[in-house]
Amino acid sequence: MTQMALWLSQAQFFVSLSFMLLFLLLEIGLAWALAFFKLSVLAGREQWMQAYRFWVRIFALAFILAFSSSVPVMIQFGSLWPALMDRIGNVASPLLAVSVLSIFIFKSCLVGAMLFGQRHMPERLHVVLVVLVAVGLTVAAICPVMLFSWMRTPTGAVFSYGQYVVTSWKDVLFNPSFPWYAILLMCLAFTTTALFVLGVSALQSLRRPLVDVDKAVFRGAARASVMALCLLCGVALLAGRALAPHEPARAAAALGYWKSAPEPSVALLASTEGQDEDAWAWRWEGVGHPFLAKAVNGNFRGLDEFAGMAPPRALTFWSLRGAVLMAVLMLMATGIAGWVLRRPGADPAALPAWGRRGLCAVGVGGWLMAVMAFAHVIAGANPYAVAGTVTLSEVLAGVSVPTLVVGGSALLVVYGFCMTGFFQLLSHGAHYGVVPVARYRGRA
Image 1: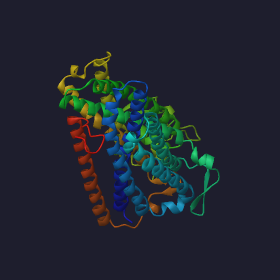
Image 2: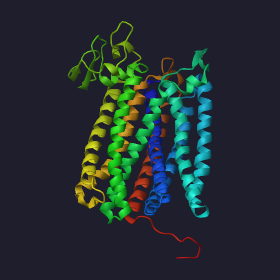
Image 3: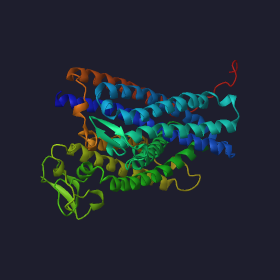
Image 4: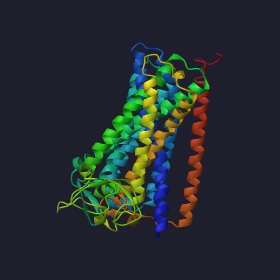
């Protein structure tokens, strides 16, 4: 096993996880948006049915891509890290089994009935079905989050003779990291979806005149984006504070706190090439103590305490700042759009064409922010697969570097085709809207 093989395996697995995450976030957020549309129709606002008919098609595309992209992830989980299940199988197997079972129940049954059975059931029953799909997709995403958070804070199990043995399922399921990662996932889903809907609405306004319900979706997405971004930033700060004692190395790398000391500091920007000293840095001294872990001697724990087992400082440091920068830029853009469209009934055409083109980019910006934030969390866990006990290098498969290069390149090509097709269909839908179809066979 070489360092290059380890790096390529991590990169390949991260690409697959990120691709699945993008469409998982979108399908969760759109599922709740569709539930809102259907409940509005049930309340007597029939105009929202047109919005439902358009966005349910985008939801179906996201559902297909999220479902299909989970297959390479599961294959790579076993082929790239085969020894990992030997270590954590007692914990991971039940959680993965529940997740797979919920996926097949909710996605294969309920989603199919929701997409194709609307004409064959009462409206109220279909509304209940749409809400159940949103709940089911959320539940299906929670089980992997439980496993991921447990791998960051492995409570409720003891590591004995090379494997974890469960002592308390309650502590495993509700480990200290789980609530924060679950809330962050949901906030990220709502944020990326609101930004995506805003971007598509802006694209629609550039391609064709918007009807009243499309204008309402545009205005609602602008306001929802601002609120979701503010909520996400607040939750991220609280999560960073709560998770610092459990993930001290990631916390130190995130703040650029290289050397342990009695006083905290935050590196807003800094060189990540040195070991304990900065070649250059823009530091804020005396702040950051809630986001750093403390040692027994009272010093704040710097990255020097984890020598040899510290996360990659450059990737952990800069990925977080990239995510923050994207969040700030999108908050500025959506804040301006929300202010211009603050009046009820405001026409999105009041925004200049160049501004709406910028909002189209905001729709993709949410995904970029999500990938950067995910990269920060994954990089901050290195070199461990399970914090403090199991390292990635010891569970890595003996796959040669050429095989990893060929496999990774093939995955990139497939993901590129899938993403290209998704955006082409999205562009077609934004240009032509919902094309009416005959309710009964034989009608034009």
